[in-house]
Image (cartoon, rainbow, N blue to C red; front, side):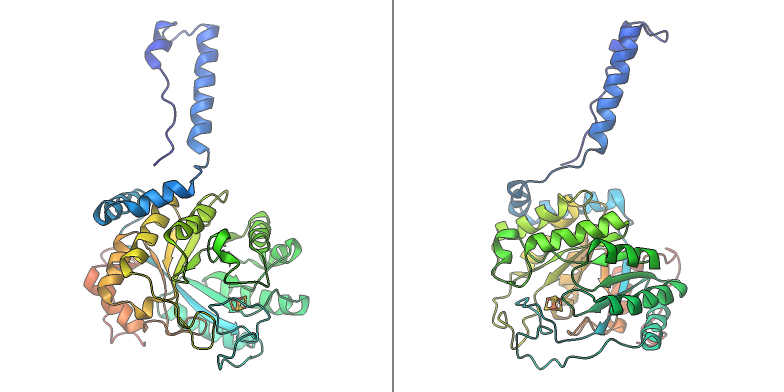
Length: 368
Ligand code: SF4
């Protein structure tokens, strides 16, 4: 689907007066142009049913459509690299059923304090040296306290000074907190919707769906770019996967970054025994995200460690164009950087920002 501008009937305008248009024709032309412009910029609303219909397409048709949309907006062979650092791990007051950092579950993850600034900057420098363009910092908080915010704003400033884009995920934000982060120069804020509204309550009870939407609104209003996605494989139905994408795609505007996570069941969490979803269903989710949010960076996120190279390649073909790059996500393993570089070389992919003709580093040329 695409938003089409209403064509202006030029011949009718010509009939009405050629180049020297009469007043009525001029008015008609102005009105038609205004309507066309409004329709061209009007955000497209996606119904859950329309997204479900995408999921129902034959796999090859869905992939073809997603790849076509992808090529209209992106270089199909470039992938944006983000590196994620946990700046404060564990002991979180929330009860997200997939998360080993929740204090509600016995998962063996120890609560730690906020990392010191110099450690964060060291990790950011290393990420940059390995080719990352964005550095994401995550803290296991319900929401940041004022004294914490002071410290994380210093991190934003320090990481920016290294020439990296900055992203933070710190839990719920009030409007003033979002503004403080914006003033410090934060580029992106991550806050996932996690799942569809009608499934969400089965996974989390300590914050509501509306709380999440409110945080996204505060982030957007402060002028920070939005990173928001979700997790599949938590026991939701296909309609609920479509429901998650409808929520994201209908945000005005939709997020600039959309991480799609495949659940990594963690021992000790309520979802430890969740049934994995069919890998092709995961690829379908990526493709539907690409079609419904054509200009977003669709990030292949948690769960990549468990995917073989062929499945990752299918995800890239379906329109994924961003990955977490580095050896660990917040608490789960991520494919090693060397393996990613080898895969990129085999597929002819390159890091976003790297010149197309530039040779890719061989796996042994860059410290992994
Ligand atoms: S996902 Fe975030 S908010 Fe939820 S328990 Fe984990 S760290 Fe806390």
